[in-house]
Amino acid sequence: MSSASPTSGTSPVRRLSLAGVLRLRRPSEIWFKPALSSVAAVAPPNLLLLALGRLDLAMYTMAGSLCALYAHNRPYAARARTLAWVVLGMIGGLAVALVTASLTRDAVVLVTVGALLAAVQKALCDATRVGPPGNVVLTFISSAALFVPQSLGQIPGHLALAAAAGVWAWLVGMAPAPIRPHGPERRATAQALNAAAAYAAAHGTGADEDHAPARAAGYAAVQAAWQTLLALPATGARATTRQALERLVVRAEVALAAPADTDPERLRAWAHALRGAGRIPRTGDAPADTDELLGVDAELAARPAPPPLWRRLGPLAPIAARTALGCALAGYASLALGIGRPYWALVTAAALYQANLTLTWSRAVQRVVGNLAGVLLFAAIAPLAHLGQALLVLCCLALNFGAEALITRNYWLGSVCVTPMALLVTEFAGYQATGDLMTERAVDTVVGALVGFLAAVVVTNRRAGNRVEQAVTAADRARERAARLLAEPAPAPGALEAARRGLAVALTDLRATADGAAGEWWGRALPQERVVLAERSGHRTLAEAVRRQAVRPDRGAGTRTEDVRP
Image (cartoon, rainbow, N blue to C red; front, side, top):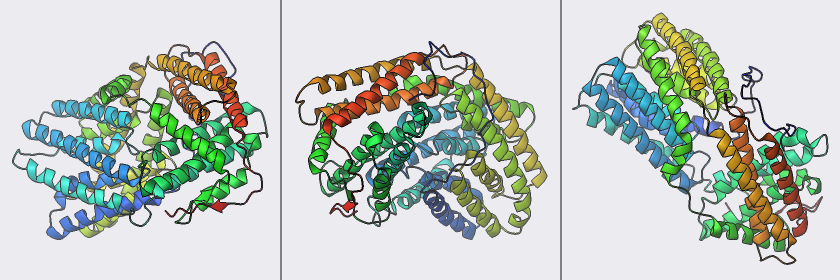
């Protein structure tokens, strides 16, 4: 799976490259959904405030409106819960910021509180896997609110505005449910089928190591599809759709384990059939499907309860420490330079921190390039926006749409729209000198990126190597369990499929953990040889399990449909 040759370890010092950092990707399949949801959630509150002549209150309504950016990849039942928690988290952070702002105007204290809030928001978003956009939107709102003069008597009204806009954002996020109630899970299944088809089509065209990225992407897409499907009810009308989609995800897993026996075009045809509101395709192998679904049920029955939140937060301590230190130092540096809005530097630092230092470096470059280009775009837009408050609001809405539409292609491209939008929002309470805003934003961007990245270099994640060891051990155990069942002449119904899926999940986790640790700075040497050997032996066992079950897609078979309506 890995392209690296087996070695005893990797160098503790890693080169930070600029190659590919600004390269554009294909847009997300649902790029327009977050973009439209954002506009639909932001526009009514802002236009209402405009009509009332109170556009200065827009920051509070935007706190709730921007919650509509979250959970677009989740089934609607799970989306309802996630959006509710995001709204509560947004209001909680805003409340802390407003109370702090009402009690003190000491800029150092405000920056410190903002940095601590950013660290908490980062850790909670990563632990609960809320994202995209993760913690950045939460931090942007809470940090900006810290520097808005408040009194304790104003806070309930401001929080009420945020809550009302949050309820509207929740309704916007749930609005497609009556039209396409199974849209998210159908998309996740189609993505898994397409990823498996891409790997199967590439298999055999070169060395196996050359296809490691495609195989890793395929397993990641399959794992994401399972997470989506398992969020659906196990009984009732929705369970019928879930079972039909589970059969297709199992076929994607089979294709990844035995690509030579797979027809990529058949997988792509199934994926295409999942678009729209048509019937769900049938796999055409009912006995095998039954055994595979028994395996899914057996795995679910044996799956331990998820660890409590505090245990999931433990491994994130280095990332939280980076965020707190980097945001605080960036804010302090901005204050030392006399910039009036140190929260811009703080938010820039908060936006940098990714799973490891290499990814953080890439994000820092993207952030600087995108923000500086966005400052120039602001210079072009500002004269138009200053013609009237209505045009100011419309420009912000257009930039809001552009940011969400472009950010999936590359973070820097979305930042080109986010930056002028943030600058225009500061003018809701009154127009300001364009040159001053541009200068302050440019300086804060560079300061925040430099100081934030230096904090990431200083605060190393020394636990990453230990987690790789644990992931290798887990993969070895999963492979041994599958191998034992393969040695039995007649394993229990569903047991082999459960073991095969458990091994696939363990290998996916191993690759993600190894990639994350490999990008750390001054980390101890990784057991690269063990990782490579565990992946190779694990994938051989997966292929053997597929052959044992004799689940081989029928080449050239047509695509039939299951009598299951979305």
